[in-house]
Length: 156
Image 1 (spheres, rainbow, N blue to C red):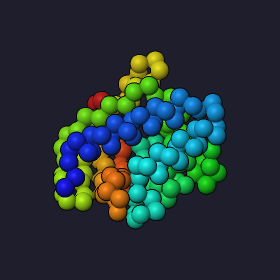
Image 2 (image 1 turned 90 degrees about the vertical axis):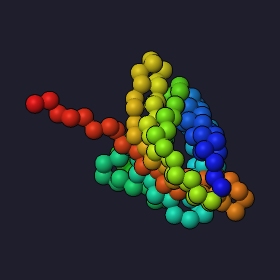
Image 3 (image 1 turned 180 degrees about the vertical axis):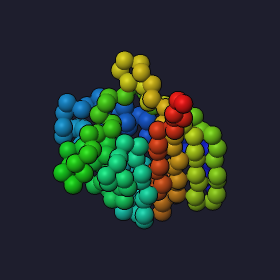
Image 4 (image 1 turned 135 degrees about the horizontal axis):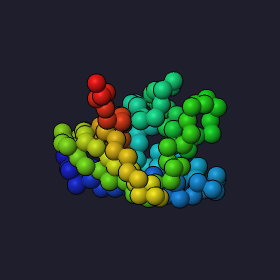
């Protein structure tokens, strides 16, 4: 059974990787290597289907490949020209606020908000849904990642 604690630990790792990627943004080789480590450690690319719908993507909305996920986080891939590298902001902190969990034996979902704090202490709230599975080695992997900026009701 996947536990809430396993998901919370995976979320913490995800946030730590995002911060680390941004902190090395001036070293292209280290930045790319760190992003590849994040994707390989936390996502299930190569072990099945990953459904990834990132926050800031308009023309190529879905990242169903490892290459597409890497591009979203660090950009610089002409196959995904709109990507500027979400992880390169840089962020100094990522905090998850879980609204709820669905826990099953080898599958789990979490949904809520995550908050990204930049170096000037500006905070961006983003809605998320993550799906997880346990791979053959018992490691938790993301196979569903959907994020969106909260809807703002227009002023009348």
